Image (tube, rainbow, N blue to C red):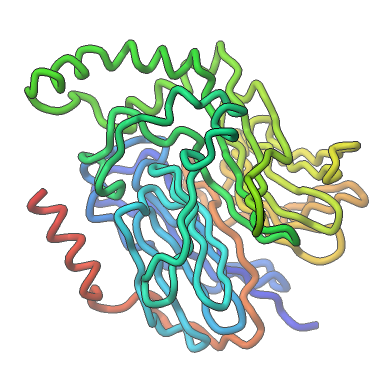
Length: 385
């Protein structure tokens, strides 16, 4: 039996400055053990947004094909070849709070929640395509976001000090290919009422900005957290959106009344599969919505995130407390814990990807020993901004 290797990223919440905020692990599925554990490179802007829920911490999405693997952190993408040599590092001012990735032969799709963008970057860093719900007034109206179309924008979403008072309107956190185009997960679409509550709390800072006297007193992530607080008595939603190769975007799945973001969205045969993080379960439903089945994931709390096909009707799923991997079989249905990744009570799985068989043995140190030019530039920007 050939061994299936997995690349798994994680994020550690409530970590102090200078502490590791996440990992990338190489896992043997056959042996059910961790083969390598690499601390992620930290964002040069992390000190400016100490959000205990996540902020600029941790490892993010992972994707790849037979030629390369791409691993994301909050503001950069690291590209590795079959020999696990780092051959590229990609970044862009719109790539603030990166979530999931989708590698294709000519480039990589990226979801960035701070800017609400879905972008495709070529391997030279050129922007091949960029899309946001702001470009689609009909979709904005359906999501009850038409009043937010004219909101302020930022020239660099990687730097939390440059974020506008309102950002991350739909928490775009998943992208996957399907026959018609791209499936995109809008992880948390706040209700209009929750946005109004947030606006009321921003009034003192709004007055200061109008008078030209300084910037907000609170961290950008603290303002964003108010939406989650308001969601406890308003109806926020998770929405699955199809971005077709031709024609306008349209909603293909929806779940209302959530208190925390849902994650990941895949097309599997004639079904959609996603992590219902709000209800601590994985969901499979017919594309037309005619039926639905769920499998619960254990944990305290599990905060279900990370999703990868495992063959048949089985999927790999990640969790928090403990940070663990599960084999979910929708045909049984059943959920089997494969292994626990770590003992830190605040560590949570983020991305899961099956490593192609053509990839060799990884080196002891995964990341380049010295920062490439654009990483050094990012650090310089953080020091002088």
